[in-house]
Image (tube, rainbow, N blue to C red; front, side, top):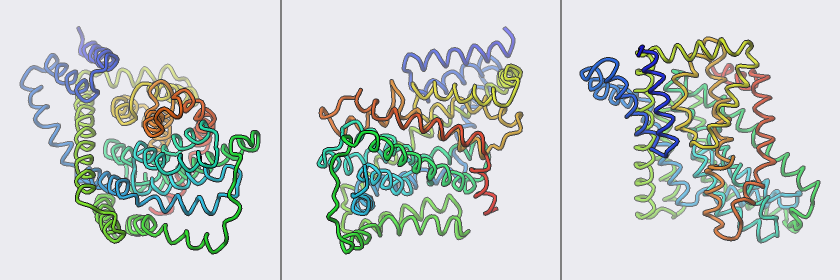
Length: 435
């Protein structure tokens, strides 16, 4: 068997292992090690196993991941985001579907201190869905809105997906964050338009509004937003003002989240330890997958399978439009069965050379890729955000009803992907200003 044949056999084996539910990190490491062993012998295989994990994890920028995760878990467990939703609820309660729109604003605020779609959905689900049910919102609208609003968490910085992509693609994290701001705000606006359209077409989805809120109550509600606004100002002001790097921003954000939680008297030893434990477990899982992807990159490069597949994809796609359509379809399909970070790290060794050869901006592609991966968070049958919301509402709403609730938003997501692909300058203009 040729070296390329060994590489392709390894990829086929990897897909088969994932299909039978072997954890992605274990499958990546096992296939890559075995492939290197067959190709180069035991010395090279064991050498890669000893060198690659250290060389990858020793990247300084990766230290921001546990810090941003810790910031998000602290904010979640100490309920620092509740004030953001309450303020949006009071200001928007008189609008058609105002509470659903408020949950989108609340999710955008939580995204700025989380970077995780799942955490975002879980936090807003516990706060926003009971409030919407109280005002007799249709369960599909209430649960669907919160499930999709959580996906904003991967676009608005700090984003764990964007950090990992930046490390692998060797793109400035700050530039990716700036591009993510634009895409995240476009997504929030798109979701708000969907809510307004649905309620306009069927007012029974959100039959009750609170029109009795006074101006004084609205102004007082703004006081509740200071915890999140302070953390956001500290992170983004320092990051985009050049005071500190994205890596340092993670430590600053985590410290500020702890300080604000103490000032608001929400911090307890139990909540702190829970946030720390969840941070360690999530970071370990992410790094195992990332190390496996790094080993796979080396295996594909040495076997020649990576170049073979990349050139084959370019030959098949006779135009940039067809190439982009193919990439979109691949990621939408993978999103139905794999979690986003695993899907990204599994495919980047093959896709990045294709994107580079096509002459596309790696920065722009990173934002589009993140958007595609997040659509997978709400598509059946896996749709992780949907199952997070299901765990929040329990038996009150069926899983099928939540999936029906997100269907309208998936259409909007596809429209947004088409817009981002057609007009890359929408993503690139803000990063260009801050160079």
